[in-house]
Length: 154
Image (cartoon, rainbow, N blue to C red):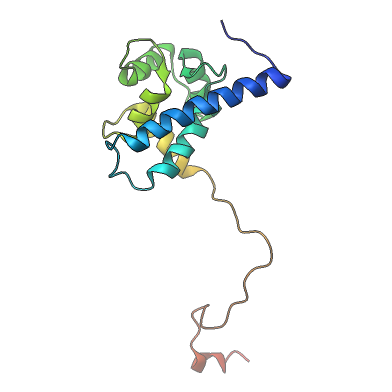
């Protein structure tokens, strides 16, 4: 049963989950299977954050309810049967849930699943942070204006 605690207990549970996921990330970094994946360490950090965002009860698994909630947040609502099929595509242990290791294999592996496609699309469609502060001063050349044309602007 899920333990929906707040306050300090929630913070402790979140830290424990993050530590456990960091251990799994370390295993993925050292196993050698994914050495050809570009920016592997950065991707693992990103996938950990994504997994934690959707593992609502910090159980270490994404269950049917959490996956349904995730799809709705991503504006990709699915039926109960579609969610079960999505889990079955990824669930190698037949637990009925997606563990973090299974999640990483899905995201880093070559096998395309519906869930992976949706998550990759969500990642790419997220707006990039805009630079803060005063914009860098640009010259006419930066704007694509040749010096001989600049005298006609004045």
